[in-house]
Image (tube, rainbow, N blue to C red):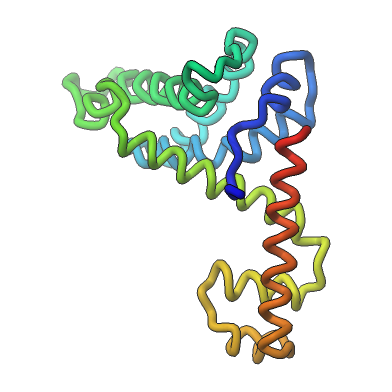
Length: 195
């Protein structure tokens, strides 16, 4: 089972059919950090990256009803990536009165057809942000020592022996904790996919 499902069609439908605040909060929690990192990667300043994220989310809210699910066509993330790219190009080409004219390599790069590297980067960022969001949702379901054993060994790369010493668990209990948390994370993703 993949740790990162496609953007759930049910979430998109909830966005399309009214003012579902919970759906928008979930969507923004997953995608806003990805949009900000994309903007920073495109050489925008941090404040401008935050502003761009707001503009992209606003554009999505205005255009989401035009997006139609069609497995034969592009995925939702591809559509979103196009919205992000266009907003970034607009942000980079909007010149204050005191800015010199002329193109930048960032604008030239973004204005070209999306390259495979950019699409792969976006997919990785999306999977990572989905994992972060789900992990934050399930963390409170576990005792702190169990969560620490999982996080240290699975995310931080600490050995099971070191995690056992840190948490006061046996090495076997660390492995069990890691497995239990990972199973719950996968289960939560599966639940989200069915909503």
